[in-house]
Image 1 (cartoon, helix red, strand yellow):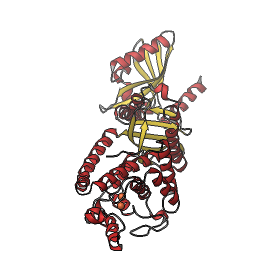
Image 2: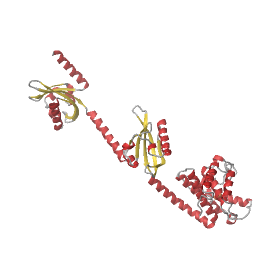
Image 3: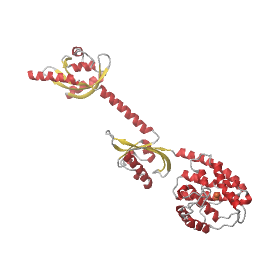
Image 4: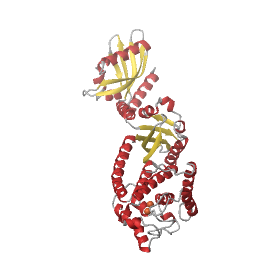
Length: 451
Ligand SMILES: [Fe+2]
Ligand SMILES: [Fe+2]
């Protein structure tokens, strides 16, 4: 018995040091505290044990229903483990405690023996985390962007509501899958390459503009950001992506650009009044470059820029006297020089205008040849823009196959021959091959639109 009491006091002292409050409370026949340790008093804001043991246990609970619940558990189950309750402190403040207690019954008395721990900081942290979780969930559920988390094998582990709604699938049908399950192979491949880049370098891909074919068959213009995700030790465990639908914005931009194109076409039409041949030629070249660029898989904006360059490429001929432009027979050196100047004139007209594509430069280079035999700067090889190479070959294709004021049409066959002859030295071989394919596919009749 003596030893047991000693052990009890030893435990109380230890508990004081680690801040665990012990108490023994007589529940029947007359409620009152029998004993408590210093930590019990301290947790409840009392400096002496005496002060707190004068209290009734139930009066320490802020909410009577919590007291009732605790006591009913003690009465029915004999014990209560880690019951969380809000207790009153001496100075009218409150403290969250966890109570673990047991009912001890002797012949004539019923006691509660138990411990309490201050869990206020734990509860505050829990509440903060829960609030942050709510914020995060709210953000995920309501943001009008597709958000997705993937593991290191690019398997989707979490998506938000917008993603699931856009895919027309439930999150359950998406989790565990990869982009290959939802997108065409080529597109999924590009997405996987981006994921791989983020996973292997730890760098983010920010604001990548791309076109996405949705599972419902419609194309979307989207802007995507991908970032790595980390575990607590700072190791990369996957990726998180945010994809915003920019289709409406892209359409608006397309309309705005079309408006600019229409405005510039006024200049082209002014040329038509003066020089119908050149007008018809530029329209034909514009159609040709568009066919080639599409065949090369260029994106819409780049094609639009190239088409505009084609529409305007001979605008500089406005400075060449009509009798020289339409002169049948051989031109003198001076006349030829005047015609060649149309490139410089056109460049001078456009170089000050800011375009999101190299419009003036493309036009400036449309008479350059890979072997340096062109004009005005005798550029060679890679110094000539891909746009200008397409424009150059298309220019020749249209000019040779159509009727000119000073000669009749030489025909498509002759034009193709001319291009094949110059492929690799004057003209870009790949582009000439594409043109040959387009001609063959169209049964050797012009594949472009005539006005
Ligand atoms: Fe030209
Ligand atoms: Fe031309």
